[in-house]
Image 1 (cartoon, rainbow, N blue to C red):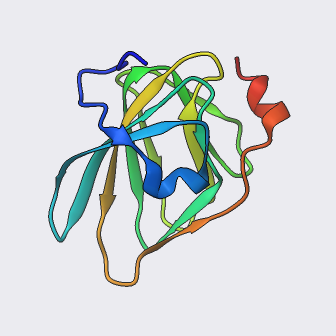
Image 2 (image 1 turned 180 degrees about the vertical axis):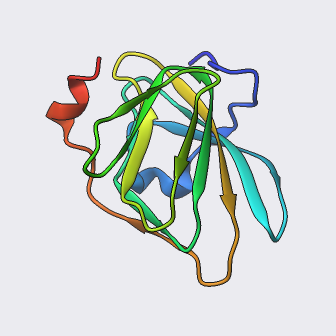
Image 3 (image 1 turned 90 degrees about the vertical axis):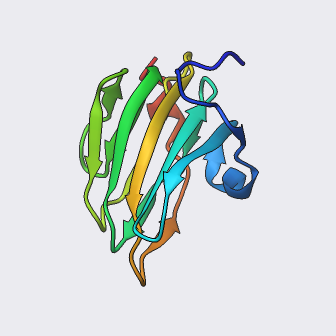
Length: 132
C-alpha cells in the first residue's frame, strides 16, 4: 500500500490487530512519560473497534487520505488532511479509513497513572459501508 501521508507509515500494528477490522500500521513519532504521539495508517476499509480511553483524552490530526471518526450517539464525521478530532476522556468512539480510501492520522494521547483503554465491539459493517 502507498503511504497516504508525509509521516512514516510504520510497521504492521500487530500488537493491536485484534481490535481492528483490516490492516493498520503504527509509527511512533515522539513521547515521554507525559504524552505519546504516533502516526496510525489504515488500509482502505480498516477501522478500529469501538473503544473508550479511561482517564485521558485523545486528539487525532488527520494527515493523509480520508477517514472517519464517530462518538457514540453522534453521526460519523469525515476526516481529511488538516482536520482535528478531540475525543474527551470516557467517550465511546471509533476511527478509521473510509471504505474505499486509505487514511492516516497522528494520535496524541496524554499518559496518566491509572489511564487505560477499553476495547469493545467492531463497528457495524452495514452502517460503515454507507460512508463510502
